Image (cartoon, rainbow, N blue to C red; front, side):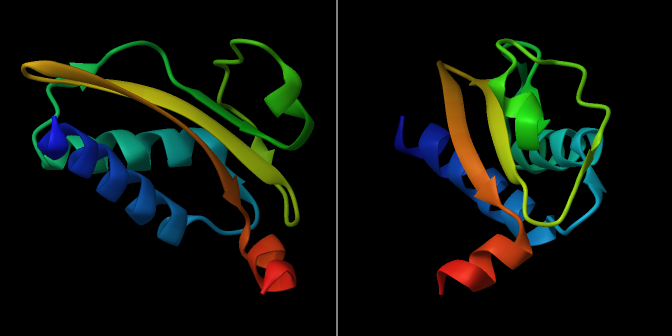
Length: 103
C-alpha cells in the first residue's frame, strides 16, 4: 500500500512541475497517467477528471479538452490499479502564477 501511494504521489508531483499557463487539460491527464504507469501502475481505474477554472464545478467532467489559463485552478481526479491495490487521488493544482502569489 505504501508503494501504491508513493507511485501516485510522485506522478502528481511530476505533473505539477510540468504544468504551466495555457496547458491543455488532456496534456495534464496524459502526463499524470504516464508518470504512474512508468512506475508500475497497470491501468486507469476510471476516466480521469482534469478540469481547469470553472469546469472544475462540472460533476464528472471528463472532456479534458480545454486550455487552462494563467491564474486558474486545476482539479484532477485520477485513479490507477497497482496490484494488489487500487489508488484514487484527488488534487487541486495551482498554476505557476497562483503559486507565486501564495508565496
